[in-house]
Length: 547
Ligand code: UDP
Ligand code: MN
Image (cartoon, rainbow, N blue to C red; front, side, top):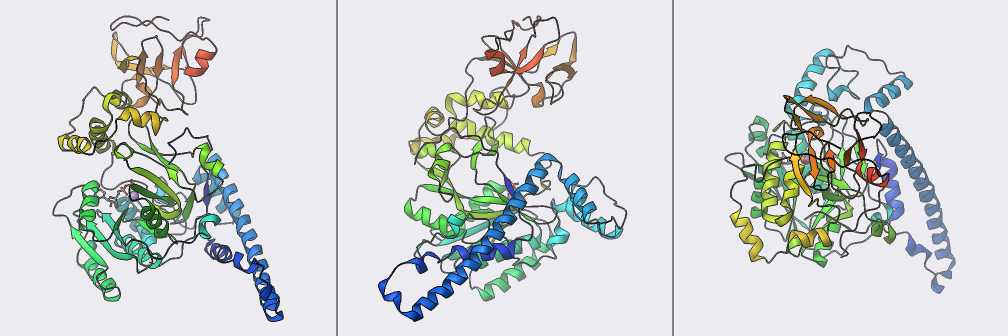
């Protein structure tokens, strides 16, 4: 497997999908079993066979015309998507509603609610309240999800090269784990139904539900009854593990993994719908190489209208703060000219493993508008990420603390000794090796001599702030700990203002003196260097900053 290379920047496109299911199923049929009828075989000169062939040809032409239609639809979706990138979703919805002559029939009780930006304009006032309360409780449109059929068809979002691929029949068996904390019952049932419907039954050994101590009533007896009903049709398929106290999503995943009896374990959120042939690429890849950890491509189910939005294939990357993000694919991937080719992703590499994204395995994931269980994720993420840093990042951990603007160690990350021992036992490689060989996207800044927020000692409650964006005028502003206030001072005198990126494709901004008596400005650091702008500052704690 080639190491991670710096990707070539291509803006990831998402494709709006709406009601293309019918067309896409035709599209998919067209992709399967076609080439065999083109094979030249002398015995086939028999007139009956020729007529049969002509029939096939007829079918082919029909299918081809359907796939051209489907491509047209895809282009329309891309255009719609580009429109969404230019304008906000609300503006596009309002414009579309106006075009279709849709009127708002009832006064909108919650005009600021994200749920009603594009959906629900025809609901009566009392319905709006029910819907809004469910939205606040769950972070998505539970009212609508209760109306949708559990086995709703979803569009096949794979590329043609995936659709035409075939997989061996004798694959390893699979346990699917779904973890949840107070998720909507309709959503969990929809996930289970999609798994049963779209996973070959001879490979699906079990579906394990892990309840991380939910309090919702419908997840108690009513869920048990549904499990019994599923098991009546598919004996022994569904199992449930209930935590006796909330342990968090990682422990929930581990509980499911420990209970699994199949050869391979797929661990998923409970708000997903697996798509066509999602499991086969995963099971085939692990059969080839058991050291690989694989991820499907996640498409997005909109939290308001449950439309499926196709996401482009991307790699799962992370920044210095260890926040994960989708990363554009490397040049090498495009050079392969195979949309089914695997993509390298993330960490595991240090211990001889690999992480890969498989473009032919697709799972629709409901991205909630908010997380009901935690309004501010950063507290938990900061602690978890500190633990990962302490175990894995060696001499580079300073970059993590820079990115969070923390002092080292700065946060109680608990006991990581058993993790460090495990790393030693497995003989894992260092983070330096990882940065140089697998993930050169992260650029360390060894020359930073000071960081934090810059205050004026005459008035300590205001700090230097990057100022409005877009714009390049720094200002003094009441202090906060957010990234627009973060400053990084380099030994050569550069002062980075407004958070730390230190990645190959993002630019940090440097405090610069225009040299004409005007106030300082922020310039992209590389531009400032290229144009020889005045970007070096003398600074000692407690005294003035002088260019
Ligand atoms: N979850 C859990 N325990 C918790 C928090 C979350 O079991 O304390 C479950 C949650 O129900 C979901 C999964 O963990 O199925 C992942 O959470 P979430 O969907 O909020 O994460 P995201 O997909 O947004 O990263
Ligand atoms: Mn989720």
